[in-house]
Image 1 (cartoon, rainbow, N blue to C red):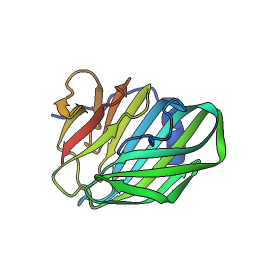
Image 2: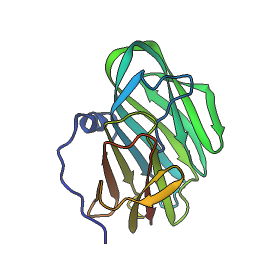
Image 3: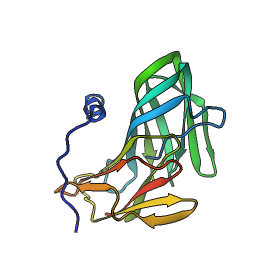
Image 4: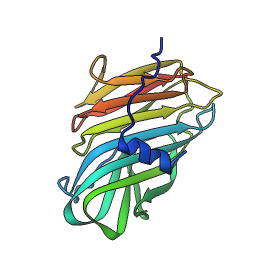
Length: 214
C-alpha cells in the first residue's frame, strides 16, 4: 500500500524551483576540487511525459556555496540511462556541448560560467531530455552524492495515464545495494502520480535509488 503525501513547509529552494519550472546525480571532474563548492540543498526531479516511458525530463536544482573567489566551470556526472540524453541546459552558465562524453554508461557534462560565479551562495538549475529509458514495468532513478550535501530531495512525476503501483527505496555503497526502511521520508500523492523522497544529510559516496513498478 502506498503512503499518502505528507504536508511539509516549502524550503526556499522549493519556492524558487516552482518559479522556474511548471536524475542522476551531481559530480565533479577529477581536476575540479570538491572544496570549491558546497551543496546546501539539491532537488532532483524526473518527469515521465508519456505512458510508454519513452520521453522524460531530468531536472536538478541546487543551492550551493562557492568557496573560491571565482568559479568558472562545473561538471555533472553519473548521468545514467538505458536510452539517450540530449538538450542539456544550465542556468546560470552554458553547457559545453563538445564536453559531453559517455564512459562506462555514465554521461558527464561540463557547464562553463561566463562570467565566473562570484564567491557566495548561488542557485543553479540543470536539465536535459531523456529518451527511451523507462519502458519497462519496473524502473528506477538514482542520485549519487559526489559533493558534501546538507539535504537532498528526489521527486518522481508520472503521467496521468499511468500511475505508480509500488515503490521501493534503496541505497548503495561499495557495490552493496540495500533497502532503506526507516531513515528517510517517502511521500506518495493520493493519486499515485507524484513521489517525493526527502534525504537529510545524504552520505558522501552513497547512491540513492527510487525503484518503482507502474
